[in-house]
Every structure is written in C-alpha cells, then in structure tokens.
Image (tube, rainbow, N blue to C red; front, side, top):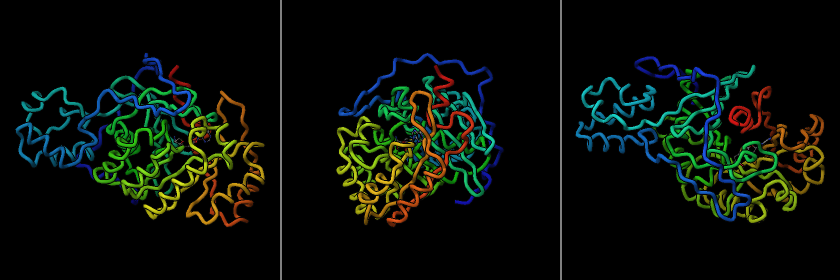
Length: 383
Ligand code: SAH
C-alpha cells in the first residue's frame, strides 16, 4: 500500500510520551526456559480489549450494550482510524452511556521511551497495562513505513547472539498489544504503515493464536496487506505446518543461522530438539501448502559460519527449494563476543551462494548508532 496521510476526520492525538525519565518498572521474576521441550505459554493478564476486535465483534458488543448496531461501525472507526485511547475519547457516543461503561479497556499502550536515529528509524519502548515494557521500531524509507513488532515480553528461546534472549521470558502478548504497536508507530509518524515484520522481541510461533488474530486484524481492520507482512521464527516443531493451515498470505522467514545441525544447536539451544532436516522438511511443506516461498535468515558471525564451506553446505540444503536467503551481518551485543564480518567477507559469502544459484540479499540493520540489536534498547533502559 502506498504511504498516504491518515483519513481522519479530526487530527490524530499526539501519542502520549511519559514525562519522567524512564525508571525501571518492578516486574515479576522472569520465567526462563533453558531449553524448550516444553513451549513457554505464560498468558497475558488481559486477554480481550476492544482493540483487536473485528467490525462484527464490535457491533455485537455494542448491541449487547443496548446501543444501535451502527454504533459498532463508529467504534471501529474511532479505534482504528481516530486513535481513540478510551471510550471517553469517542465523543459521538452519548456521554451518559460512556460514563456508564467506564472501565472497558481500549487496550492502548503508553510510549515510555522514544529514540530516533539519524536515518529516521525510531525505536520505542512501550509500557503495557500491567507495566511491562516491550520494543517496537518504525523504519521509514522512500515509499514505506515498516514496523518491527514484538510478539512476547522477552523471549524464552535464549539464542546465544540475541539481546532479547539474554533477558529471559515473561509472557505472551495479547492480540491488542500487537495491534497497538502498529497504531502507535502510525500515529507517531503521522503516516500509514505499509509493512510489518514480526522481528521484535519474542518467538511468534510460541504465541501463534494471538499472532494470527493480530495479522487478520492488521489486515482487515487497519488495512495493511498480508503480503506486506513477514513473520520471522526460529522454528518450533509442528508450528510451521500449523501456520500453513491458516492459509495466510504473509511471508514466512525462518532463522536458520547455521549450515549444519551441530553449528545450529551451538547457537540456538532449542535446535537440539528440532533437527535441521525436520525444520527444512516443515518449510518444504509450508511452500507446498501455501505456494509462498520461504525466506531463510542467516546471521553472519565472523570466522564461525561465514566460511566458504558454510556457503556450500547452505546451498546444498536449499537446492531446488523455493526460497530466498537473507544474510544479516551480526549486530554486536555486549553479553557475547561474536564478531561482525568485514564487508569483503560478506560480499564473498554472497558470491559463493550466487555461484550456486541461490537467491540472496543482505539486510543491513537500521538505526545502528544506538542499541541496534533487538532487545538492546530495552536492556539498556529497564534494569
Ligand atoms: N524469534 C524470531 C524473531 C526474532 S528477531 C526469530 O528467531 O526469527 C528477528 C531476527 O533477528 C532473527 O533472525 C534473529 O535471529 C535476529 N537477531 C537476533 N539478534 C541478532 C543480532 N545480535 N544480530 C543480528 N541479528 C539478530
């Protein structure tokens, strides 16, 4: 979808930014899953808010409240277009009724911290209703505004190179908490969001149900095409096949990061219980069931997985596979001492894959000056 200004009857309210300097929020002890034979399932405290609901559901809710059905459409418009943060904001509704239903949550977050890089990338820490803090990122480019959204508070996968993984896992996000991230970035930029990547905090396929409802809502209610959305997963046994059954049009990106099983399980603890061959088998099924090609993400770690034999092994696995390799030069995090490869070795790895007819691109992270890697900003602001 082309970027355009928001068709609002009244200007969008500026997103609220906390006045105070960010203070650590007391939070329950994180639940850390050392390995994931048992998928983490901590549920959000508030499951249902008005945000995240379809026009039909909102209409049914209004009717159940004794209101005429057309008020459902008004509610939908105020939630998704006007940026209503509470029912009190919806001034077309009778005042007496608004007061009567006080306490019904719209489900919006508050901007707790906002930091803008020189390339225009804006990183947000958002405070949820229970005080938890998550990251979202807005990345503008010539014709696009891409939002990187989180699917969990923290992440239990504990990948060795990932700042979020080092911070432990707290809970899944509810549908409205995912949709809210997109609306917050859209309002703050004053520009339509065109693309969404599920590449923020968390493992989306440990929260598949809420993520799938959020994708449908962002598509039908917020108006973003599914083809402009990418879901990135490290792979959870059986879940890629389950996702294929949803028949979504989103791009599936799989965090491969290694060219053989031994190397992968060194970097990704959960890979021990999910052999590379099984993961690739599920990805093949995904292509068959959806007709959509899969993207394989591959972090380049200097001297570790960026060698010519890694490119050869990777190409071997992906021969004849309807796929695309997205190389991600490692963004250094303080907890581990992996190195980012030089530009020359990145180019060499690309050439090695291309010579084997593998479609490949390099993803350069945006907003590199400050806390570029996912989870780093949160780690630096929330003790
Ligand atoms: N849990 C999902 C989403 C994670 S974030 C997944 O694993 O795919 C999206 C991407 O950023 C993943 O490919 C992840 O491995 C990668 N990533 C995490 N830490 C990184 C770092 N320090 N440098 C570069 N990429 C990183």
